[in-house]
Length: 254
Ligand code: ADP
Ligand code: MG
Image (cartoon, rainbow, N blue to C red; front, side):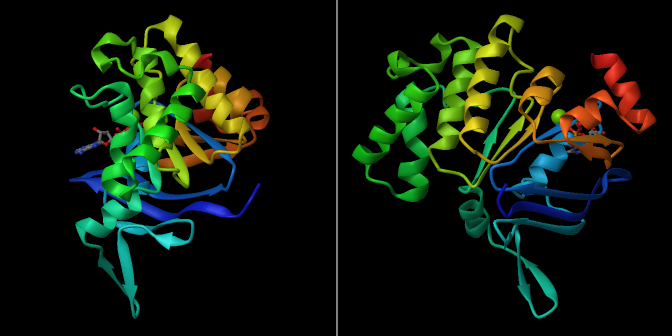
């Protein structure tokens, strides 16, 4: 495993009186796959969203590849970055959502080409070549001219993954990528994520798929009530959970 790619230190976040993250520390190394498990409402989505500054933290710091996210340090004070700079930072942080979020009026190929051309100013021809390679990788070469509404949920999610990869992100974040899928479509999406894991993509995956966590994660993090209550290799956390909260959770999902 390489150097620290994503680092959260003492991250706190409240919505009104609801303290959703209560001082989260997390390290993700280059090439590492971290799977985040935890009950509904434990702060998993909020945690992911702080990594690309979709949520501003109330306290603590997030860095990606050593770069402070959302802020600039001036003396000993932090100043929030302008929107433009936040958007630049986000181009290095891929995000795959539960509901795919493809552009409905664009074809599959156009969905994958869009960000590299508009955000990175890549020449269209080059972006297309890359998009075709990525679509082949997720097994959708024959769908490049289709519109999202003509694809299954599993196919749409694979396009969303290709689209995220097109920006060659430093880290890829997944928020329950298979939760919106019919059960028979879950496997094809997990297989793509497994393939990325094997090729050394740095990933943080929020999921309820414990089998996937066991097979693919380098580290499993169990979040409960906005705090990391347990983390470690999957065999340790999943087969020999130390914390009663982890045990209670696993007994429900297994
Ligand atoms: P999880 O992904 O683990 O289910 P979330 O991070 O989505 O948990 O939510 C954690 C808590 O934060 C929940 O109580 C949720 O209602 C609350 N929450 C999340 N986003 C917002 C928001 N934008 N405004 C107010 N409350 C929110
Ligand atoms: Mg969530």
